[in-house]
Length: 184
Picture 1 (cartoon, rainbow, N blue to C red):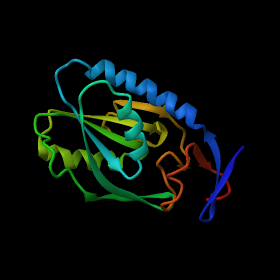
Picture 2: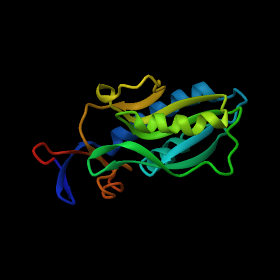
Picture 3: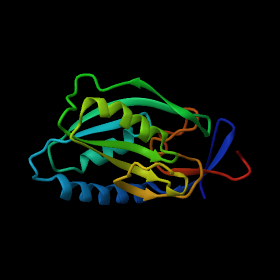
């Protein structure tokens, strides 16, 4: 197996890019069936920085008119969730009221970011909010907010690649790499 070292940690390749793209294809087909031809122009809200590659790949596969906006939130320090989420940039210039909003997130684990995004959106009065996620870790997710769509379900464990990072390194890796045990 292929390994990479980022800062002081070693990661092993566990999901090749081809499998990630195949799963994004399947998710896009599902979203296309749901929103194609319904007359709505949904607003996709991509959570930066991790979801940028997922957002780009997903949007290329959608065959209905949509708008995209970006929010930057931060919840990680190193390999641990900080437990709190800070908004860095927001939705300036986008109309949210009365619209279907689909939040695009790279990974959902604890759900703290999901809650923060919902708190950010609710005062803007969207018609609905759905979540479309690249990676979902249900065994560590204990929130009541539904994760409507996800490309892949993963077990607990720290991963990097395809937009996800370890202290800002690894986002550019095409594959997903998992932290090697005994290395935390």
